[in-house]
Length: 277
Length: 279
Image (cartoon, rainbow over all chains, first blue to last red; front, side, top):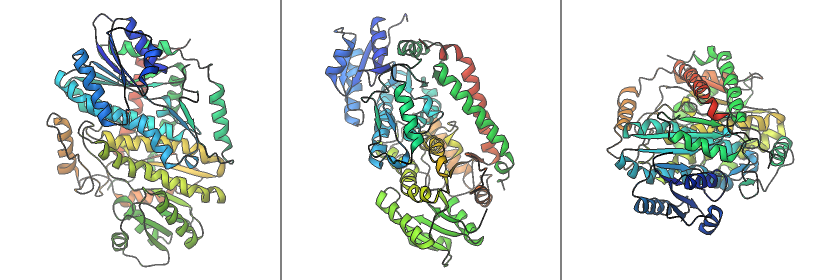
């Protein structure tokens, strides 16, 4: 990490976001970081350095996002790396989650990311450089019982990232979408995970899945500090990946998904290929 | 396959939905079909029959959806196959697309389908059977379409929730299939159907190139026959071995293969970094 970059990181008061901010500040980087609660963010990061710009931002609000980016640009003179990290998990069968609960999860996991992209692009286009990193999840590659809405939101992040990479390549801007497996962050605590308020008794498998995940809290195999270091590393790669998975569990689940899909596609080849004029 | 099956099809006044409804009716199925505009729907289908229940539905409204499903049950007694077909394409760079334009596309393509699923499942669970067919797109698995960022995001979302839904409802005897068509000769790319952003930005030349290609060269030249797509869906409906993923079209088949190979390749290339993050 020889050259100094300006980083803009959302959802930085805990989890991956916090690990990223701390490591970057330790390495002498310039970091703007957002949270809904600035005091919480400042206390968590514990730095008074002029290299650190803590920002209180409502990511679902376009003008709040626009102001935060403007503030960052005015403070540091450029924006090199944007990490869309803010997000939370939502558990429940589709039938158990209301339209409002579903939309609220998309607000933070999808529409907030789109807000940041929409308002940072003018700066990145002007510079003709930049790297947008969107934090998705292995659930965006393979969704499990009881996490349909979360899988949908994270799948959406992967989809928009793949297209964005094509759209901004000619402008000198890179895109990476990161899909972590299970990491020992606060993700599985009440603060980061919402579960349905209206469980339906018949969805026993959903309850079992939620119990299994919640009992994993504090036992996850993934080290968030190593995840943060990996994310920082890809920024310094000459040809960074469009897709980066993190964790042996994510790697295995993705391979299993692809193998299954490959077999299914072959099994149904005759039906698939019989629909042209 | 039994033509005693009752179908419920959304977005039925044009495109694949209309083709499917007409074919189902001609094969003797009972069909409830939805559209925002009931006159348009009735004119397009052009059938007056006890087997056809046209419904004016705003799929963005849970109440409207609930009413439509209840009316279908009270008319036909049950619902066997639900086709979440309503949806539209959106072509623009993410920076060019306003929050509202993005949300409008998600409202129909994602939240509309979730409303239907949420409201139909109590009936399907009670009868311990049913087949939910979600019309996605090859763009729900492959993001290789410049300018289709929001659209692909909506269809990736459909794929994501459908896979989890399949696991969720399997214990109740309910099946889920994600239909992922390639390019079919419907009105999908036509004016009034494919939405483009109000505030285009000159810098996005490749997005304009993609727009020009789709609107001026590909529209009505697509290789896929909607009649054959509808036939494929009728064939797999309620089959015990129906696939979770059904790609439609030789183009979709090819692209799905390429995407799998490309992700596998990425996984191997970055394996060391990926697997070095454990404690």
